[in-house]
Length: 89
Image (cartoon, one colour):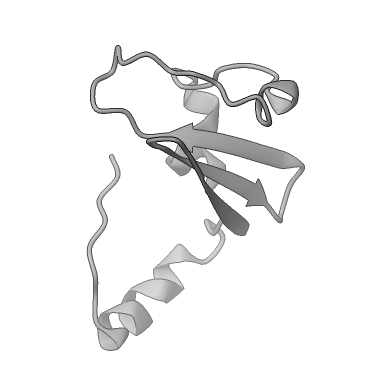
């Protein structure tokens, strides 16, 4: 489950220590391709790149951009191995 919301600096300072040992280091690259916005995560703490495209519906068609196709090894959408919780272990 993913939940995003803004928090205050005080809340961050209180919560941050609880993430010790479960942090992920990554750099996010945002690339717009037509109407699609791809988020390409470059993990700095391991040899891993993930490309993410948020869709309106689960069965919406996806057109892989020509610049991305040569870099894709496989679709990991349904793979629990790449879930945020798993990556943070």
